[in-house]
Length: 336
Ligand code: DP6
Image (cartoon, rainbow, N blue to C red; front, side, top):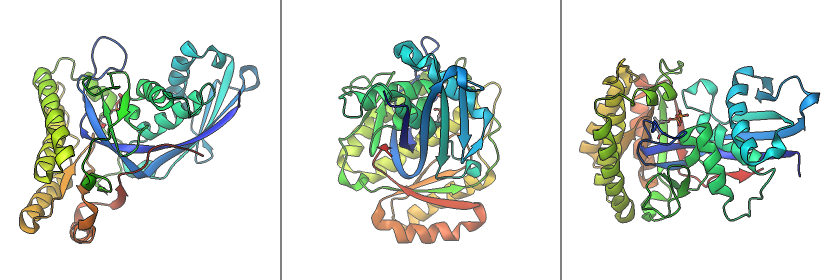
């Protein structure tokens, strides 16, 4: 068995949002979700196994070379899941070196790419990447670490939890390959509106779906949107694509606002950008749309052929954001 593995895993942006967990089972989503895999936003991790009695703690995490004790608990939780299936890990300590291409303070969650990279490193101690089920198994463990991480194991597009798609269950995602070529090089320009720590974590937000008055409606809508998106992804109808993707983002935030307690993660600048996107689309006929995760930052999605016009639009919005990260749909994880 090797004692050191390094993997790069990408971040992802959900088009159909995962929001809420089933009360039965562990980390199972209330509804199916689907995401673009990103290319430039990723985590690189190296996990090294040492004898447990030779280290000061069971997991020692480092970010950019500096010890970050606050990462230990999440990594330890994942180690426990692995130990159930791979007892060889029980008497080992893990030294985890990790770095992200996007700044920690950018408001982009690193849990998806981070948990995916760590799962790949740990699984790779016991299985090789050429094993038929390697990435699906990695998705299973990554999902236990953080739900959205389960989708960060595949190129281009990943689907999680829509049982009629062969291979995915609530427990693991799959690569979704049945899409129009327009989506092959889709762009995602991320406008960073705030670098502040979120007032409510996604994990806490998911929990508030348990007694949410609109929970049933949400599950129905997510399934309906997912099914509609499946045809749209095939036929490349961008008008419908934009309608579904924007409605998913706004529904996610509506659910937050109508939770008890209620919370609002959108900033005034987020809404200013949203309004400007709609105006720009109407005037230019360029199929630019937005999506928003659990925070104020806005992801602008568009086909590559409109890059220069959209970049001009982004420049004109400067007063509404702090910085921008230009990303696009990417290839999925890599061993490094
Ligand atoms: C809004 O995966 O961060 O980004 O499973 O509790 O770790 P945990 O939550 P997390 O939730 C992400 C929610 C979302 C939507 C999405 O990515 O689908």
